[in-house]
Amino acid sequence: MELELAADQQHLVTAVIPDEDPAGEPTVCFDPRGRHVDIPYEVMRWFMDQVDAEIRSSRAWVRLRPELVEVVYRLRQEYMGAIDDDDFPHVLAELRAIVAPADLPVVLDAAFGRKPDGAVVDRA
Image (tube, rainbow, N blue to C red; front, side, top):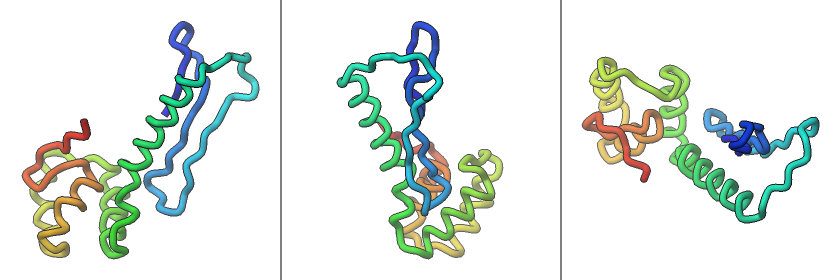
């Protein structure tokens, strides 16, 4: 995630959230070579709230049971977090064979942001 100065699209702050690595820690980076820009407290607070929400949503899966974390991790590595509509039924059938029905929605959401019917999860 990046916080930019809209007038000249200068990157002010970059937040790195390693959502593919359960052991990785989020970091915030400032460009030490960039020109000095005062960032209002409320803007920085808003940005950090956005970062916090992204961490919660993109990394919630790492707090699942270990066997589900393993399944989600494998799916995210194999499909890079996105799946084509054509591939979805095949993957769904595969998951139904290895994941309990009660766990299927959380695994699909964590791996692809989808529901068992293929619909995209609304995060609003």
